[in-house]
Image 1: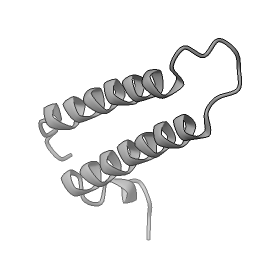
Image 2 (image 1 turned 30 degrees about the horizontal axis):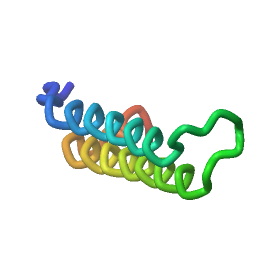
Image 3 (image 1 turned 180 degrees about the horizontal axis):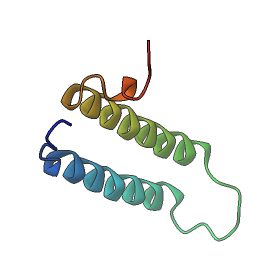
Length: 74
């Protein structure tokens, strides 16, 4: 089994992106009191979420090559 590598940088990235997503969502929604979200708010937060997921997946795939293929027999 492969040795576990330091994941401090990716954890910091995910924490930072989470804070940015919350901040951007709060700033774009503003003082809204009902449920009719601004499309710009929804799209920017969705984009940031997808960006976070993609970068995290790429990071893990580069750090643990072949991980997704473990357990499969040829």
